[in-house]
Length: 442
Image 1 (tube, rainbow, N blue to C red):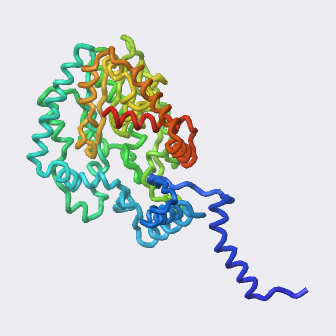
Image 2 (image 1 turned 120 degrees about the vertical axis):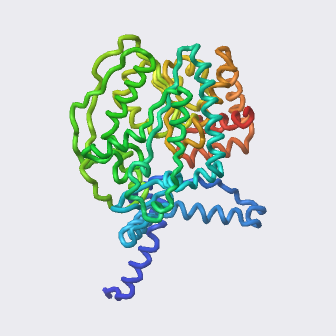
């Protein structure tokens, strides 16, 4: 039997290598680590004569293949690793690499250099006028909620550039804009008598005495090591405002480790590298509550950004009765299953007036979308009152689902969405119906 020539062997190897991505795309033979972050889904385009002529179908196919070819994730991670290792740069425009590999989120550095203020208000004077109006509206809503025994406490959470500016790149340090919207709000709250906690000066002092960083090198939220301190500070503030005792936080173990939780390495994850970065030893304290509420446990409503998520799944919530978290005032998470979902579909009046304490948590990045529109939500909920008929809303949504099923083209489109998003058909129908409902009832 004649042995194959060298060029034949090389040809077979080359063709196998070229066909391997196609095999992976079709059969998913090899497991691939998913990329962190968000990729906007591509809207499907049907092949028609018009879509072919205007090239919209060709563009769709090209985008689809770019996002779904075999070994895509591995190729991207390899390229990212190459750029990071050789040039100390990131392909993620949302991440700023500072000195000593300190990572920052660009939205926060934009606030630090004044870009966010200029984009939203133009000038400091315009910002101060808007802020004064916001605080006046806050005071009016606070007074309206007093009749229900509901108190609002504002939590001004610090951002990483404010606490660790020394590790920012030199070009960002030089552009530092001295105006701090949170510090300005803190002054206005003080003058207006709005209950609040300004964690910015607290964290600046804590940074000087704490044996470990109050922000991890690769995170953008306050480190888990500070959560017991944050939790206890908030609990005692609530006790002061409500006039009754609240439990104290007690740490049982420092739990020094190099195994970071997701929020302590979230920016590293978004770099999407092949190999993990070096992790310094940090504490992940184990803590519990000591002491009991002499009065009944207060009901808590939290409206804020992701800074609350590190408190959400800890013993902090055990100090309260009902706990509701309205993330960005859009999506509700709750200790009661019927209160989970889109806020627009919930009985907002019951939740707001049933809360003993409302915590408003935001950082300087979100200070420009003041309370995420929560003040208007309260105003509308109080206007609707307790007799607002949620059953009618559900009947309308079910009617929209029926409309979808009765429309062959629409129904087929929803089926395709369910398959692409890898969710059940009923769930996809519900999502579409809720979206249509919101558009028709804005």
